[in-house]
Amino acid sequence: MTSNVPRSWAEIDLSALRHNAQVARDCAGPGGRVLAVVKADAYGHGAETIAWELLRACGVRDFGVANVNEAREVRNVVGHEAGIELLSPALRPEYAIAVQLRLTPWISHLAEAKAYAALASPTDPLQVVVEVDTGMGRSGVLPGDLPALLAGIRQERSLRLAGLATHLPSSDEEPDFTRGQLEQFAHIAESNPAPEAEFRLQSRNSAGILGYPRGERELLRAGLMLYGVSPLPEQQARLRPVMTWKTRLSLVRDLPAGWSISYGRTHRLTRDSRIGTLAAGYADGYHRSLAHHGTEVLVRGQRCPLLGRVTMDQAMVDLSDVPEAQAGDEVVLLGRQGGQEIPATELAAKAGTIAWEIFTGLSRRVGRTYV
Image (cartoon, rainbow, N blue to C red; front, side):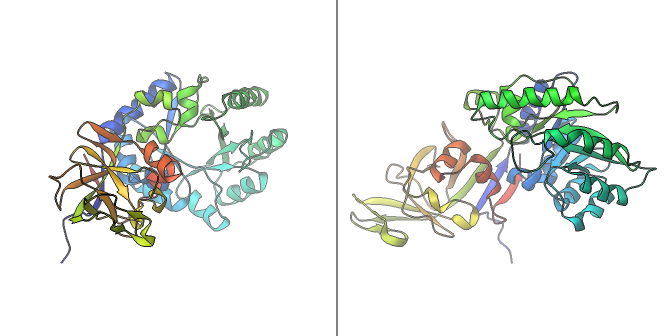
C-alpha cells in the first residue's frame, strides 16, 4: 500500500507562471522572442508540465536545456513545433542524440561544428548557435576567433547558423561591467553581419531582461524570472512567485526549559516550549545550513523559528506562540500563508546560497502539484 498523504510537496501556481511569461514577452517587444529556460527540471518546478503550459498558454516556442536527457523530456511534450537549444556543451557520445532530437546546440569551436556537421544532413541542416565568450569564462569562442568560426560553419552544408549568444556573469551585481559586455556584444554582431533570415542575437538572462534595455530582434533567455524571482530586488514587484513548498507537523510536544534540541545539542530551550517536528529535512532539500541563522517557517499564518540542526528527514520548530497548532497542520517552508511570506531569496540567504539552488535542490521526495 502507498500513502496518499504528502509529507513534503511543492504547489506550482500556473497562473503566476503565465503572468511572469507575459512580463518577459513584454520586455522582448514586438520584434523579439522569449526562450524559456527549463533546465534542471524547470528549476525544480517540473519541466514537462512547465514546458507544456508555456507552449500551450503562453505561445513560447523556444526552450533551453542543459543536456540531451532534459531535451528528450521536453521534446516529448512540445513536439517538433518548438525549438530546443542545448545551452551546455554536449559530450561526444551525445552529439548524435542532439541531431536526432533536432536540438540547436551552442557551439564554442570549429571541432564541435564539424562533428555535428558529419552527423547532420545537407537536406535537413542542423541549426546551431555560436556562443561568444565576452567575460563568462565558461564556454564560447573568444571574440577574436569568431570570424574564422563563422566562416567554417557557413562552409558546412549540413549546418545552418541560427544566431549568436553570450552570457552575462554578473548582471545582478556589476551593472557597469554588464553594460560594457552588452556594448561589446552589439559591436561584435555589427562586425559579423548575418544574412540568415532567422538569425537571432541573445545575451540577456533574467537580470539582463529586467535591468537593461533590450536590442532589436533579440531572443531573451528567461530563467529565474519565469519562476517568480527577480535577481534584481528592485524589480521583484513585477513578478509573482510560482512555488509554495509545504510540509506537515508530524508531532507536537511540550518540552521543559533547558532541554536540548537535535544533533549536537546545539540549541537548548530557555523556557518551557511547545515544539513541533516537521516531516521534512535535508534529504528533501531543506538545507542543513539553515540552522542557527534565524530561519523561520509559517504555521497557521505565523512565523515560527527553526530550532537546532536540520536532520535528514525532520526538523524542529518553536510553536510556543502558536498554541493551537497540532500534528497534521500544514507548514510553509517557502511561500505565502495568511499574511506572511517566506520568499525564496530569504530562504536562500539563511542557507548561505542563492534562490536557484533552493529551487533545484528539492529532491524527488518532494511531490509537485499544479494549481
